[in-house]
Length: 429
Image (cartoon, rainbow, N blue to C red):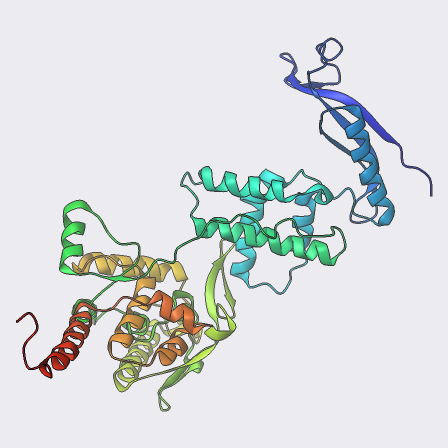
């Protein structure tokens, strides 16, 4: 096998004032200043498709170090194609092969790659990527603002790392790299926000200083007040299902009449409508556990029956303009709803209701909280929400409604008082 030629040279990053380009090897300081610039190697290697390309890498302290790095890359090229592949090229190739991804998952991967991974690591050769590169990326993400100007949350940083780790696992399987340098990275520890109830004290702080919890739920009375006020809203049944049965926004938008059996008093979550790459797409639910059958109580059956009758009246009034989409929640002419329309409409209704603010997704949190307050078994709540793990359900919904907390406190004290009565004198006596 012929020996691959490795060229080394010293270059610098000085910019020519007239051309605006880097001077590279032509900088006049290079011959007279041994500490100026750094050493580079250049070598011909194959890309992922087996085509030969010239790769140049720099930052080496002396020509011997650059020569050794070039020879190592050339040796890797003899073992198979892809030695000249950069991290950016591999990420693009990997994402292009992921045909079975959910639209929202693909959108998340693409955003991580475009906004964070390629700008930070894209030019690094895949074979030269180290754990130091990965930890440097994570440190940068944790300390700098995102493209939107806000600091990235720990959960977002963990998600970006997960995208990189998954792509590099594929590179290991393809035998492009021996180990995954993203394994064992120093990750932040995101905290899952726990729902809290809008108590009188929290409402007062919100009214006085605008302070509001990250995730808040209404009490039963607050929810009843809201639902009573929006009883004539065209999408009342959607708010009801979110608040009492815990359906997600995309599941509401994707619900069809064929998914509902009013006689059996149940609905089946089989799909969702979500935003991906600026469009609304129909896809499977969020996870395998999210494909579920949700039991309906008698009042929910009545709510859906009235909604069906109302939709039939809209269809008759629209005449030929009616789109028979088959969806439960539609526009006035029968077209399926955009998920963000549900968000905007709910926000306006909450503002008009006078109730403390919550997000549409907080209705789902409230459904879980109310179910647990009604002493529903935790396993049943898990199934209703479509959680894959009961640990997730238990860890997230540790908050309880105030009256339930007071009842628990009273029961606990009664146990102690009962035990003390056997001693023949009251506690503290």
